[in-house]
Length: 224
Length: 147
Image (cartoon, rainbow over all chains, first blue to last red; front, side, top):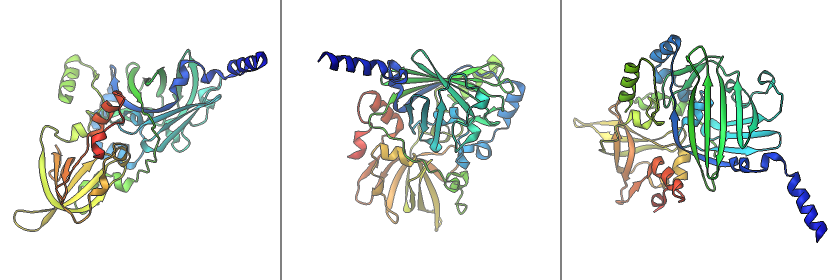
């Protein structure tokens, strides 16, 4: 009996840190409850891009392309999934079938990290680590283009954009705070806070977006 | 709401947004006037339940004769299934009355609210906001959709 107890204790102690404590609550499927955008101060170049933005021509949604992780998370209905592993974290987004694999390798420089979403390299290279109970994901190497079309339409990012996402567990709630830093289009860093609810029994389904079905021209008779 | 934000931003001299998601150009709130509703009577030409948006095409009689196409925009397929909306009840060839929120930009476009089917059944969709509220209250989402 004593040996059995000792064995159980040893197993409990040897459970990897990623699964221990509150951070284990991050695992699951989540649905967006609310998104809040902080103070956004554009540079003159950012203002110029925003003024020229024409959603019918410039919105990557119409080509079935995820503009950025911020844009992906801004889409209200498709859920996201977090799965933590000893040396990486999977973040799967139903919207546009984005599947992200973020390495948890101490000392790995962002420039040496693999593209997090192999099917969408323009979303950049990411590295993750834990800060207490929060998962922190840093990303760089994102391709210049549209950053967001919801919340604030016509925000652009340069290839200097760097983001830090903090995944904060709270039982059946999760918050992801994304700090964006891009000196080309933004005077100072700004945050977008995504508040999620756990989706019981939730599953990430295939999105399977087809550009010919997503195009704005589907609203124009005889152009479908 | 968007105008208020933009005006505030102009006054302040910088762009300040703390508005909730969904006020942008490519969103239901920005593109459709949810304060209005319109009944469109027509014959179902196509039902496309798909991502990123579903679409029903109706053939609507024109006052002077002939028909014109009216497009009913709807949620993505995955969301409709998650909300248990019985989308298979709408069939090509059916004469239906679809109640929509009209587009703010295009005259031949509206956003789905309800559909009255040939047998009088009213097809409803609680929508994402109600689904989300249901989840927040510990329910499975929109139970009434499945009725």
